Length: 368
Image (cartoon, rainbow, N blue to C red; front, top):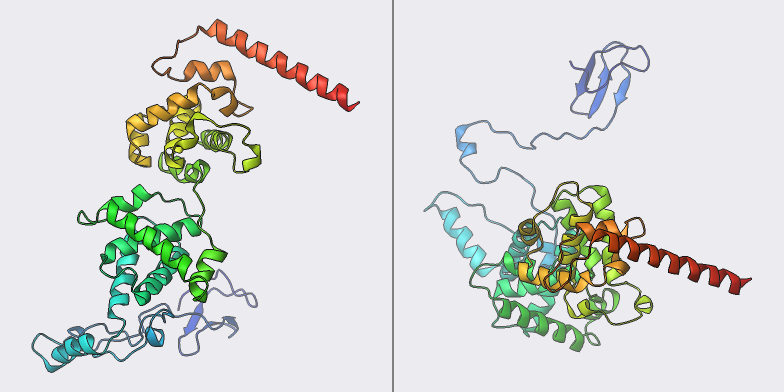
């Protein structure tokens, strides 16, 4: 008898309950009221009676989930493994070698799952999309001769781009073994894109991958949520980073009035430089450059170069709630830029505010 998570019976207010395991019910021992019905038994579904049963393989009587990408849904006859030298052990080895047409796909899907775990990709949609691409490429033979890990990395990179999961090419190559080079992954990605475009008209699956979820270019703002969380920044700093990233590269191309010095930079490099500037302005605890390098995987030289380009346009990047003079006083001055006194910065800020008020007043007069 136990309380089974209930404080009192709703009928007699009793506090003692009995679990009927055969029916899956929780019954009040005082009045017989069924308090909870059809509960799920979370205990193991097997029982062990002797030491011999413990020596066997997996005691579960159920298999894994079905996989529509495998022949027959991945459901096939499996011979259990016995001890080394037993007949069942030898039969299992022979059966695995000769009677499993999807042996290569199963191995690749397993490696795909390991890469997702190393990259902390919790979304199963990304893994499923990558496995679907791998199967299409394997059946076509277009990537024959390429390494399995390189193809898996290329499929995962494309799946991340399709499902709007911000993962850079550097992050994917960083978790790969040393024998898998960046060039191999890049070539596999280009060949995969070429194959999907060529087979879009003949294969519905390939057409759906390109038409329904076309790969999109990453934006600096897409990386901010993850980077700020890893650096444990406060909410105000996160908002500042997001606003500066959107100001640096508007997602609506119609809002981009002119070319900017950092337009040729990668979104990841721009995000790292904005993160450095925003933490200097708003962060309660100072974040070092080395911390940003570790989180973003962008070289320190690149961050400084992009920051130098952003520094000269800081006025347009700062959100409305951040004072320009106060922010410029906190920001490190890059090499080649003169450091103005604070009095001059305040005068510049007043002139800018007056010009903005005059422009607003003129617009109101024109509307009247």
